[in-house]
Amino acid sequence: RQPSGQPSFDNNGEGGLDVWVPVWTNSYNEGYCSNKKEDVFNAWGDPFDDAFECCDFWFGLQDDQKFCLSKVPDFIQPSGQPSLGTAAGLGLPEQFVAIYTNGYEDGYCSNLKADVIGTPEAQIYDSELDCCTRVFGDQASGTCISKLDGDRQPSGQPSLSELGLPNQFVAVFTNGYDEGYCSNLKEFVIGTPEAQIYETEFLCCTENFADQKSGTCISQLDGDRQPSGQPSLSLAEGLGLPDQFVAVFANGYEDGYCSNLKEFVIGTPDAQIYESEFECCTDNFADQTTGTCISKLDGDRQPSGQPSFDNNGEGGLDVWVPVWTNSYNEGYCSNKKEDVFNAWGDPFDDAFECCDFWFGLQDDQKFCLSKVPDFIQPSGQPSLGTAAGLGLPEQFVAIYTNGYEDGYCSNLKADVIGTPEAQIYDSELDCCTRVFGDQASGTCISKL
Image (cartoon, rainbow, N blue to C red; front, top):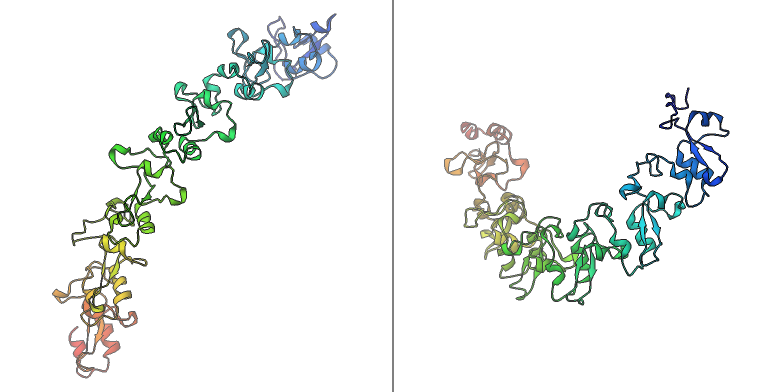
């Protein structure tokens, strides 16, 4: 019949109920709280759920001996977690108070039960760091900070000892601006205003040492702290930072190029950093007659995201642009790298579209279309080759070269390409019956 619904212990001093009441003695300073059955049922007023609340309410003004609190079992601390025991010198978790016993300069923060209990709530801090920075922020001796354990760093992660605090970097000007650098060592970070603490070493360097001629700060960046969040490919390999390219004008415009090497990228304004070498080249060196920038593009950085062919005349990129010669009738479309990157206007996804748009009015030779590879026909299927006399599948057009009576239907590439879509038929029969249905000679039908 206990309040908890559980049986009472035997009240031999080793246990009791799960509620607490005050027990008054001859002296206020010797009063305490009890969960013994006889005390609970003889008490007046509502009992408390734990001994700490009972002591705080009834005996909060006891002298320094705090007789009532001294009887509080370790498993009922204000934090709701078990005490680690004053004997072990560890104290209560997440409850720290300032100790001025030896003065301000030797002051520190403690979570020992004897120090915490009885301290006003507003003066109890969640972490030792918070207690130190709020109470001993101007401490020249650093006594309080020096007592911080690794597992109570601002990041909430363990300190890396000599490697410093993760994701917390501050500028260090000890040897002047040009020799300045960024550090995450505990002695530099702790006590620095929050607005001056950066999440990455890169951000700290660019915000504080962007005009540094020596490059001291940047030179200390580790590969795993690059702006891209990916490891650096190291300058030794000549590969640089992934997905970050900037224009380099060191030798003038015509010899300019784009680079992702660390020494060029870091310190460059964000608006001038491009995700791809291609974009950087086209934005900065589009009118370059030498093609220096474009010539440095690697196959795996083409617009398609696929490797470029070797441009020996047998392949190229997967986009097409017009190439103008001395005659309109000799113009054609190309996917060679040097042509694509020197062209103005948007490229086309296939050669047929490019030819149709730019050279649709070429003479009967249709020079541009004659260069279209067989695998890019309007039907989306491979051409069967004009040499074999088979032509394009499912694409037939009417041929009136020798007049109506001798007219016929053809799927030869030279006849089909350039014909309006409405005049292209799916089958030779359909073409013949629709166009030459009144043909007395039967020329068209005879070719079926």
